[in-house]
Image (tube, rainbow, N blue to C red):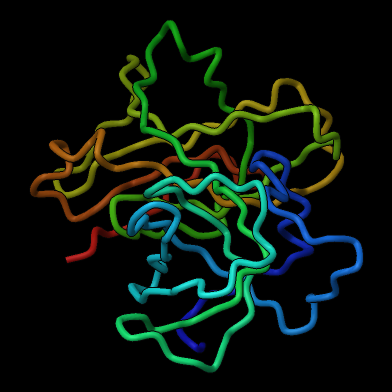
Length: 232
């Protein structure tokens, strides 16, 4: 499983902006030993059958879904996948797994930032840990401070700045801004999460571009610009 990227369950539980624990284990279940975590996109085959396109390009088939209850499968939904690897191989798939839990990743469209929407979109401080493109999504691993109250939601957006204060795009890169509205939440605890943005809204603007420049108002270093190249 070397190609898979794994995430710590401790970090996942600190993030409040993603719907958490969509499918849960019973109190008597103990599957924590050996459980792995990765990110992928659900692809529906037919009816209730589905598989995952992983961010490394490989396919994962969930042949055992015993633990998955009350989870609605939607095609192209970005998800955290909690699983146990199985030894039996499935033709056409790199990995065969027993699913332990599925959690939806916050997935949004890229939107315009105008003079009228600037206040509601906000520009509170947020850190970018990593950016990567997979399929038609830009994914941003990030950190922000919150008060550890699950009822207090934050808003994240990736925007095309159409105001007079917008930074000019370079010839080879399209400039976007990663925006955070904390809604005056108290900054007590540093949380972690991943958000995915659909690139289809800016597909025409990406023609002939090498990639994206993402402007972020970071927690400690102020305004920073991150570069992510498009896959060739």
